[in-house]
Length: 326
Image 1 (cartoon, one colour):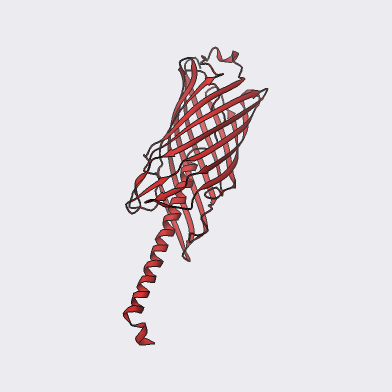
Image 2 (image 1 turned 90 degrees about the horizontal axis):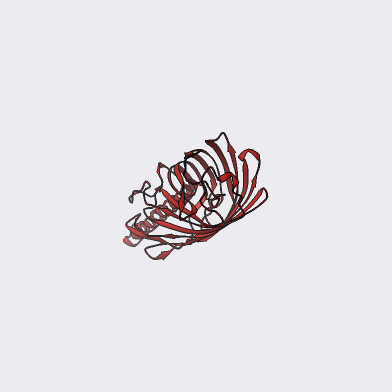
């Protein structure tokens, strides 16, 4: 037995088994890192956005400062060597927005600069793993145009405007400006562009407003993925609805469900088992402080999903507005 255990064949088998174990361990950490990035990206800005297609007086400027907290378990492919996966993300957002007149139609432009701190823990290959990172996430840019039911109106004329049905479109562009190091497993940036066109409709009936929006997000490839690989991703299709109730003094509250699917990724052409089919539900409450300031509170939680939806997000945002005739 001792001679056999010292044979080249047996030694080679032990070395091969050790390499397999190390490969699985690195793969597990990589999966943890990718899931952390997924949650961090979603926590940098609220995905459920009521009143996107509301009419806004022309010439107003908005500065938004927000904080969000995300925590919970993240669902994974059962074939992956990960158990007890849990994440916690603290995120901050600085944003600027301006309402515009585009050929007599109301429009808006905004830029969002997020910062995030993410911590993730999991059991991988029987060992406890943890990753902790802080830095800038990818910036986002939005442009929306209401092409029916929301004419460009000055602040002085806006009190006479009564919403009925609004139809509009929005486009979101995410730029690869976040923290990214190809030699690291965990990054807050994605090293790629994404673009999301969206169509939306808003209908007001008394104090209630119903909104429905549907969009699709396309991704460019990350050609400098971990280990010098190329990571690509299929489009993600989404639909979200909002039931908004307006109270006195500018207070409003909203119930916000959303569903999204698609998004399967590939690394050097090899498919990952990470397609999305997720649903989340949330709520939003807006509280005016005075003519120039307001506070918005929001919360969302996953109700079912294949990947990355078993977490809760809560946050607060302060908004300051200024502009012509305000």
